[in-house]
Amino acid sequence: MSLQEMVHHVSYITSPSGRPTAVQVEIEIWEQIVALLQQAMPTTAMAEGTTTDQDAAWDLFLTLAADARPGVMENPSIQHDNYLYG
Image (cartoon, helix red, strand yellow):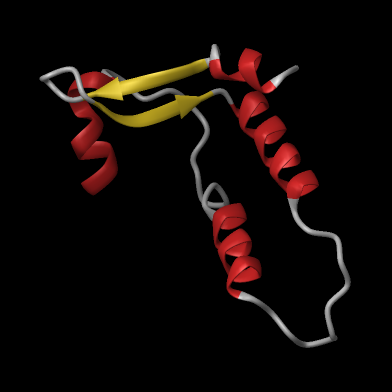
């Protein structure tokens, strides 16, 4: 699936004024996005034990969904602040 096709499977969560505040995406699409990002990562070998800010940023990004709970949010457009901030 192309990146343009993936974008069509994204649902936007909006504020009461209609401004997009978050994105909801099916897990299958998310996994494809992560795979594309991993392919885009530089493959040049670095000295063992060294990391860059870019490496740290990718490591952080790839762990974002590690604790995500499967399922669908009930009333996401109404409850998004509650889901995000508790």
